[in-house]
Amino acid sequence: MPNSMGTWDFQNRHVQQTLSGQQFVGAQTTLIAAGPPKLRQAGHGAGENLATLPNAVGQGGAFNNTGTGEVSKIDPAGLLGGKATFAWPLGVTENVGIAQNKQLTRLFEIGSRRSYFIVGRTVSSMTMARTLYDGPNLLRALYAYYPAKFHSTPAARQSVDQLLAVRETDFVPLRRAAGYADFFINLDSDLFDHPFGLLIMFLDSQNQIYGACYAEDAHIQAHQFGVSSQANIIGEGVTVQFDQLLPVNVGAQNATEKAAQSRSGVRVIA
Image 1: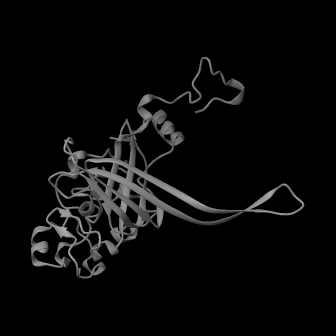
Image 2 (image 1 turned 180 degrees about the horizontal axis):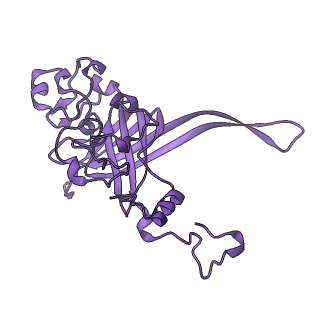
């Protein structure tokens, strides 16, 4: 907990007295996964605890419930086997940036130095960069939920793996191919007229769940990649706009709850 104002001592104490290096959240403890446009389309509500649901994330389910009510740690091996039911983890992602901007109108009045604020809508956007490899490229990965059988040509249907198991009634056949096999490149395809969703989940260095959020109704506004004669790898990037950033209940506890369970001897994370 932070010091009180009366005990603040900048020369000898941290402001956060009980904070350890293992409690920080970093890139290595962050999971990014692509899913359906709406969180409810995965069969889960925005307020539902995903940590209690089997196969919530990944091809074999990143969450495991021990049956005792406690949330076990994310098992990386669980992402490698079985079939996905909700979100497909995006590997070799180099950076993701999210911005939320609320419309504000500042109103002054004659006869006063004070002002009023009229609050408007929130506009959200995202940027993402990812390395190209022998597997689903960035555009294919972001649309992992899209069933292969609805692609426009027989060749595309035969070569594109269905990454996620979702309701086929959510889609209509495409008129223009987005790509073949793992390489989707035609942003003008009507595939990209459909939205997708993105899950971002955070753990600290002790494998304790910190929180998660879900970007709903996301659309790709721009896609770019470049090739250099001296580059060892090729990178892709997208600019995305989405409707809202929903908090997701993944069984996280605040610092006070974790400390109380630790004192009582209850194990929070297996």
